[in-house]
Length: 407
Ligand SMILES: [Zn+2]
Image 1: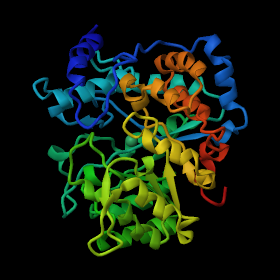
Image 2: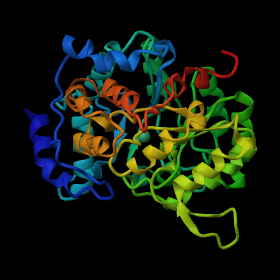
Image 3: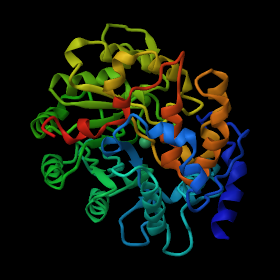
Image 4: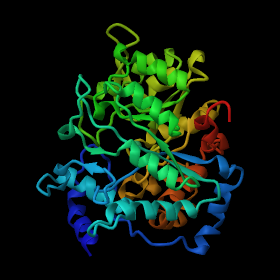
């Protein structure tokens, strides 16, 4: 099988993945088993995860699309990721292919990605949806697209099309670079097509959220009442334009303009300069995120997503998030799909060792990861507890945040 051999060849190279704290103790490859077995669907852990949440409000707010574009989708990834002699990029792509259980045989990647995603959505409680992200090009200061410096590209049109073909399961999120001369028109068009948010990854797309040139864009977002989901904290997986662009304090600018902002991953990696003060120290980005969260003026504007916070290299913030129930209605759950399907990224035993997960949950969670990554991520996060304190139901009932205040 081609997929097996590609992934197998890359598994060794996977060890070289830079910036990721990989654990191989749970194995390397996802077995990609087809359907959710009945015993897992009815497992007490899974049942307990759905209890107390309104599934019709559970939107997984952070999902990536993936494919090779052979279906005419416009999906694209940088060809350098196909170069086996550049093992970091090659292994990253192979891991994504495996995590999303994509069939790499000719012309099947795009469609098999969607089929697998929909199969997983159908096995969730009725009403559950994913928010699928577009992903704009990296752009230079004039707004010209720079494919050679982009890692991947997901056209808004593709994400919007999937949402309109599968409205029971998919909502969509546009990705519009603020330096694109057409940005404001694109925002209007995205709003008209029902985009639930806008996604940025500043360090990979070359966006400075603190730059005055974004002000007209922010005014438009505030007027349209569309939230901005933007990555903060170190990115690492994508080598881009500088981690300083991910400094959470740069997001004061959209917040002060009245934009609702979701800081992806709660800025859980790396250090940032305390630019609130002259000559400010380097502080953990998470502390800078916490400072913003604790400012009363941002209460109705700022949220954080908990995508990927169970990953080995982000886990140090997990206890701090659980210990802040006063934040929980401002945290929004997202899986970062397909990433939780990458077996070595989340080392479950470490979560148990930190006393945030019952050891009895290990076996069903490991099995869930191999059949349904969305359910795995949901059940894992619903099962976390620190001193008896888990995330509130509100953290998972994200639809009200993204539907807007009227709904
Ligand atoms: Zn992501």
